Image (cartoon, rainbow, N blue to C red):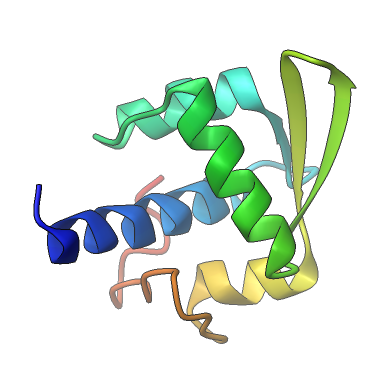
Length: 105
């Protein structure tokens, strides 16, 4: 896969993660559920990919992470992450949502 395509896929997957978190009442999902939900959005949802994206999103201040066990992470959306998921704020490395797609999840 070329570098440009890989970058586009990564940015879109990160947006999908933020939008999934914004769609649940407490803004939190565990990595297992999140991985399945990411796969349903036509992305790789392996534990390693979710863990890598989660760490990056946490570095950007878009999510917080708790590790209740070595094999489980719980991601929680931050207010900044919610703004990025909506498209009212932008962070390089996360795709900007398309207009009118807010209710697609």
